[in-house]
Length: 109
Image (cartoon, rainbow, N blue to C red; front, side, top):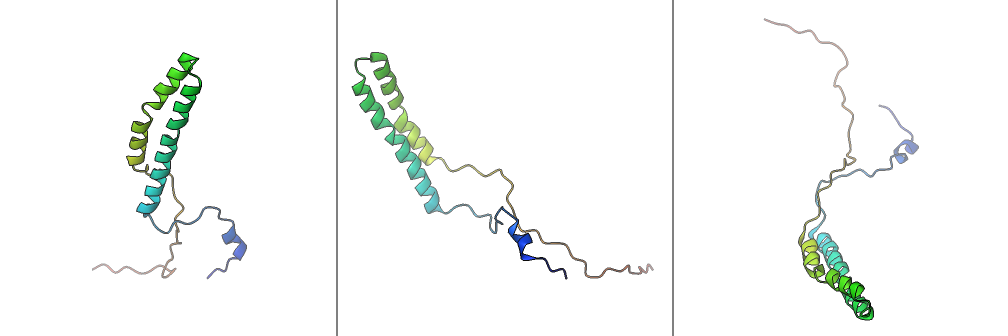
């Protein structure tokens, strides 16, 4: 049995994943709510800015056109499930150990 110093274990920077479970439903819902609020929160300033810049008609029109599809986009983003992770995760790998280290006779017959 080999004894390793403690500092070798501290060199590993990636945490070891002990489960392949997805995030909880509450965590997913909270993240989707944040995305929805952020996207819908951009609509109100666009409309306010369009009212401020009404004398520059092309800028006001651009801000209004930008704000029209935001509710639809917000709903699509909020109802979309999170993407699957394609990264390689750090999993615990144990060393393969032999029961015995010597050769055995094989008897055929």
